[in-house]
Image (tube, rainbow, N blue to C red; front, side):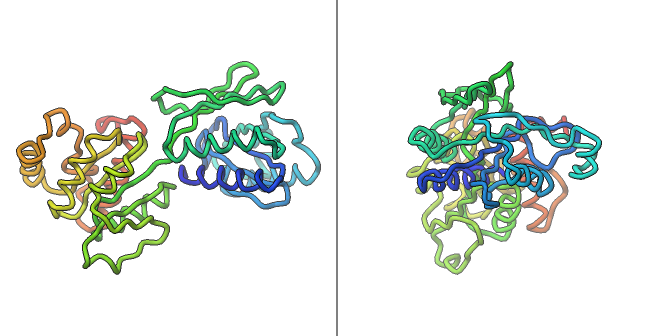
Length: 323
């Protein structure tokens, strides 16, 4: 749940500003089946309050019990969960899974607050950073991260490197039954979701957990931009909404830009975007038209599932033939 990372850092920052010490946990690696991927985070103030997730429940309980016993007081240390017979029986991680977790115990210092503010900025799309943590001393620093790979975590000798970048964002260019279903699926996998639609007939639509922008999607994209972890999907069949959004999105680093329609509709849209929008062949090639995986979908929820699955495929760098 990538958007959960934002909530973790926001809570850590709030506690730090209140003067509360905290434990920031980051999943470094997993073996076997594990509910969370490397890079997943959790923060707690040590009283049982926590935001984020490591495993979906069992590891969190073990971790909080360790804090209650007065353990895990080092500035930075690596802890394994599920790597012994006794732990596997108690934690019940699926399929013999093992989690390796970095646990940082941080005081509410000015330096830590500045560090968290920089992480928050990175997750909100201002820049991409790499955290460097020295396990022996607990020293931590941030460097610019220009890496484009999907590997978020590296452990080298006594050093841990963690890449921190924008939370996965989905911009819905216009509202429709398919767009509403996409919002539901996207939120379930932890995306930040923004829906843009100025049409009067859509003013009554409110989507839980979705940022509603009552402006043309193209205007929102032009004003707010798209970072490299943004997907833009046009799902209305209305050229006034869809085409303008596509024309604006191709000038951003958004990793996925798509529009709904048949092969024939997509071909007509491509011709229209070239003729009216002045898009080049290279820009047209960036557009996923028709959008989504070919699952034979007809119902709105099925189409939405195919769209979100294709977004994840591209985000993780998988080719269609490799599925």
